[in-house]
Length: 193
Ligand SMILES: [Zn+2]
View 1 (tube, helix red, strand yellow):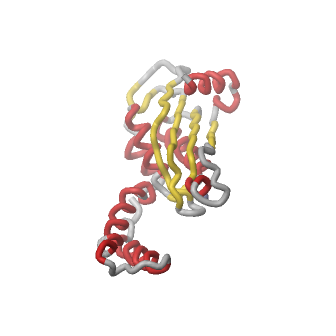
View 2 (cartoon, rainbow, N blue to C red):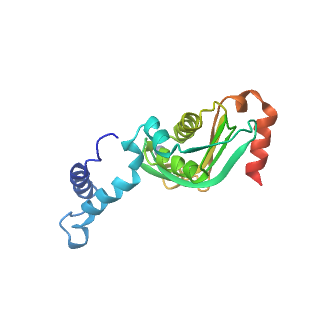
View 3 (cartoon, rainbow, N blue to C red):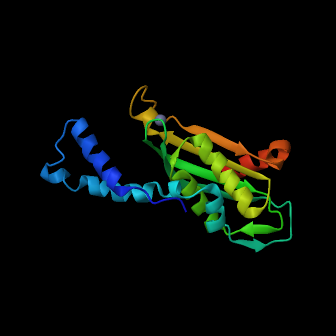
């Protein structure tokens, strides 16, 4: 486990932020805000405290499974994250994970937890996919993993060009999913259903 999130520093930063945008941190309705922000950040950035190895260790409980070459898919896992360029919310995010077991399978709810933890960091959507793929590879002992993430970025939809509804889709494609086009097609058609 990495060190805890520094709540005191977040509180100070939140007070300064309130001041900088032109409000008064001592205004009655804002007095508690820095404290709330700090508590919220501990939850929203939970994944910052762990490395990918640690997440694989924490949620990597697997069960023996002898049939190899079976495709396992978990789709439509809800996640959210914050883009590291603007600290802006990435929302309406769906994560789809597929893998080929190599003698063992991971608990399905654990896949959702892994996605959640990988997203709860200052992130890039591309890196969320890569992190999840790496953690699943480590937890399941398989090279063959595919992760697709779709999401909207408030730094695009709420400011600048205001590309409302613009969805970004990214993928991490590893092992057999990279080399076997039929397998990849099968995954994409199954997540569309
Ligand atoms: Zn951004």
